[in-house]
Length: 293
Ligand SMILES: NC(=O)c1ccc[n+]([C@@H]2O[C@H](COP(=O)([O-])OP(=O)(O)OC[C@H]3O[C@@H](n4cnc5c(N)ncnc54)[C@H](O)[C@@H]3O)[C@@H](O)[C@H]2O)c1
Image (tube, protein in one colour):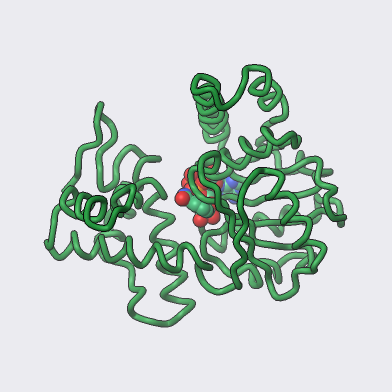
């Protein structure tokens, strides 16, 4: 069914699910956005609205396109409403148990021909696919954050992914005006295999008192020409997601160099998850972000 995607179901209306809904709707796909949390659906739709309004005011989108894109999105707190979609992109919390449960509930609802994709940052595509009734029609489509801005999408085949699934996914991603890179199915793929150990090392640098939050971020911005400091980036990704990725690397590659920094664990245990919860390595609750260390 190469190229026959018309309706896309998205699971998870958080940072990534909302962003994927935004770009898919903008490209003309009918989007059904599902989340278990009605609050997350509401805040996800508000973010999409705000981001599209910003695109209009900066001249990147016209008002008619904004209205058409918004009209392409429907939201639902009922999983059964995804019946009939051609492709589902799962973008729920980075937790293998959560994702497995979603696919187990979802598969009997879907048309047998429908494709399944996961936006996981790190979890094995082969392992997730093996739990479903369609490993040959399962693929990793890994968008970057924020989705409307970032050009790259990693495509990751599981061991059983068929060529037609890969070609359809490639077509779909290209139609969103994104650039594809293909990664093999190993823990955290390419981008996060390289990026997350650097972020984790920045957190160790903070933990060991080598520098403050500000010193570390300034050092990497001005000293390594990174557009954003690693701790600011960790807040942007979400500290729970960072921790999950480090755990997947640590477990999957059995190498102590991937040990998650205890300070990262502490922040997550405190519920200080970064921008999305209002506080992480910076406190975002005031007018300007203030370092928390
Ligand atoms: N944050 C990033 O920078 C980034 C980048 C690329 C990929 N990802 C991946 O995208 C996925 C989502 O990350 P995010 O940053 O959007 O997280 P998030 O915390 O912003 O959103 C996760 C959403 O999943 C929902 N959810 C949880 N359990 C669910 C269930 N059973 N059914 C439906 N919805 C459920 C939550 O209510 C929440 O709205 C993860 O797999 C993550 O690894 C994240």
